[in-house]
Amino acid sequence: MAGVEGVLLDIDGVLVTSWHPIDGAAAAVREVRERGLACAYLTNTTSRTCDEIADALRSAGIEADAGEIVTAARLTAEYVRSTYPGARAWVLNSGDITADLSGIELDDDDPEVVILGGAGSEFTHDALSRVVELMLDGVPVVAMHRGTTWATHDGLRIDTGTYLPGMEEVAGTNVVSVGKPSLAAFLTATDLMGTEPDVTVMVGDDLTGDVLAAQRVGLIGVLVRTGKFRQSILDLAPQRPDHVVDSVAQLPKLLDELA
Image 1 (cartoon, helix red, strand yellow):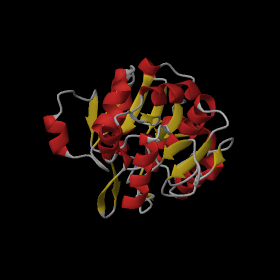
Image 2 (cartoon, rainbow, N blue to C red):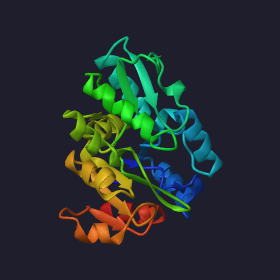
Image 3 (cartoon, one colour):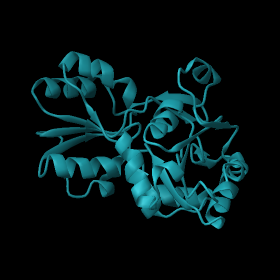
Image 4 (cartoon, rainbow, N blue to C red):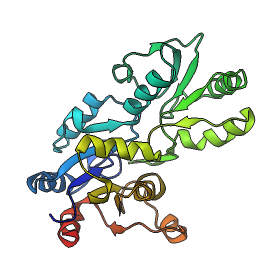
């Protein structure tokens, strides 16, 4: 496989939708591994821990180990521990990911930092209003990611990134985001894989958050036409992905071409 040494995969919308496997995903991942390429997963999924995500992928027939999974929660925990050591944190997130936030003291009542995870029913008017009030009082806010949507069998759902611009405008300050499309997220994943960005393929269904962001740090971007992909977004985009395929099932063929 001259030219490609590793494959980095988004999960939701690329390998599974609502945790049901996308046709050909398991076979594609299996072939990547059989070719001896490094393989890892980079996801903004914040509703499950790394262990739970690995279990869900294996249940879908996709080989995965928790150590190969880089989640926005895992990256955020590392960031908060180093930037605000010992700080009490209020975590507003859809899903219990406490296991991936080790070393962080959780305190909803008197937080010294606010951590925003994935959007869900917890993102109520009252909860988001309180976040803004805390921002105005000088409490730092860290977002696990700036993803704006995710795909389900019932259609798209809006995510945390849709709320952040308004909150930043009211508070007059920026919210640090750690997961995709943060460039550091891709570099952390390639470090885990032991590959250089320019010989690593990133496969995603989000043109901006997955593919173009990865290309900015030198990865080879592959956009799939599944999950949250919308042709209208691709047509209007001023920047182009390196490659576009119908689904991850076509990845082995693309790898042949890149070789």
